[in-house]
Amino acid sequence: MYSIFGGGAKGLRLGKMLKARGAQVSFVELDQERGEYLKEQGFECIVGDMRDIDLGIAVPDGTRAVLVTTGDVAASEVTIKRVRAFDGEIMILAFSSEDGAEPLRKAGADIVLGIPEVLSSALMKVVEDLETRQLSQTLLSVIKASTPKGVAIFCHDNPDADTLASAWALQHICEIHKVKAIIYYVGVMNMPQSKELVRHLDLRIKGLSTPQEVLGALASHAKLALVDCARPGENNSLPPTAVPNIIVDHHSTNMAIKPGEAYDIRGNIGATSSIMTSHMINLGIPMEVKLATALFYGIKTDTMDFTTNVNTLDLMSAAYLSAYVFKPLLDLFEAPLMSKSTLDALGMALKDREVRNYVSVAFLGELPDRSALPMIVDMLMQEEGVQTAVAMALVGDTVQLSARNRDKKIHVGEALHLAFEGMGSAGGHASSAGGQLRVEALGGGKDKVAQALERAKALLFKALG
Image 1 (tube, rainbow, N blue to C red):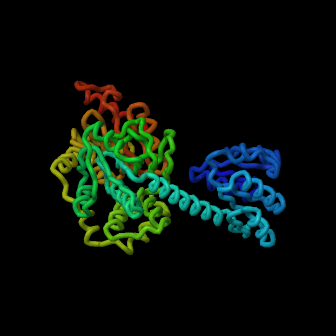
Image 2: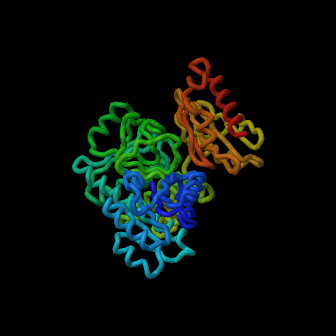
Image 3: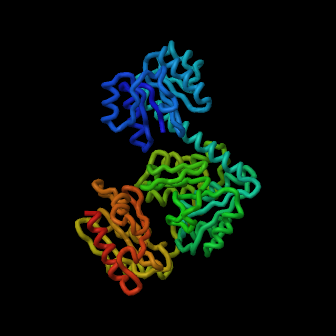
């Protein structure tokens, strides 16, 4: 949440930039007509004089920063003093002419910018840097508060390379600060890339098999961290009632999340490894060769060689990590051996796939886990004319999905979420998504699996056009 005091051209431009990044923005605007215009643009707006507005309403709990964008230095000075007296810790950024900058700093502004032409872009960069630094410090404070029992770091079930590298980075931050941390996952780790990471990096990770073991792990630690997923019980085997103290994830979520003490959810970032790399940089944590190689590979795989969902942070993180990457180790990760079940699933996908209007859907049969899906759906995307592909497999009593997309008219994550709402969990990015659906919710049962799969396929083609 950001509160912008002043709804002129600069304030509106900045508000739109923040909103485009998923932030909630409210305005305080003196002019009634401008206030109505801001509301028409979809913003919350309090019409009144910023010098005497009720700050309890204008700066509600959870506000990350107050941005004073009016050119009236006198009004800005009074406002900044009031906000600083109201909240001694909140970040205040302001705009002023060169002559008015010093009074605003003395009034309590943390940062004052004075070049109108670059205000919005410069302020946006400052806001983003400020936010990430604050997130990093909050993360560290939660970690330190976990002593002596430490942090339980939970990956999603059957973790991939990005998840494992991110969890390891969080564990490394903990251990640098003398805090115990154990990485957990549930089920069997069958993804070839994940096996190679664990084998060659000697990751200290513990697999759990039963709900009782999960509860025991939670009870033995002071804090719970959830990495590369945001909701307990969704793509992981945590009890839905668990409340993580730390959440770090790069997936968009369509459902409300109970925020923990430190949560960093950025749906516009390509890989959680990028987010964890930024936290290590912000906290001054020394980078090690093996960890850097794992993080680089996590970014590389989740952005499909930097071609999908890639963000500036992903590129900057990869550039930073590249100085530490050990190439022979990276080569081992990029050429993992495929299991017989994966090869069999690939054969079935090529035989079963159905293409309609540039959309390819393939059923891979019954598999022991979902590890083959991401690899095979990437191959389906290589067929000439295919813009969107979905691979699905029966895993236990669930239908697992993995999707890819390059059709700009489709947001595949939203399409899957809407198509299967109430049948399990599904969603993701515009260009990649996944899900797990209950067979019974699809209208199937022990004797009606084929019927459930046909319904899933029909819903996919309908949702994807």
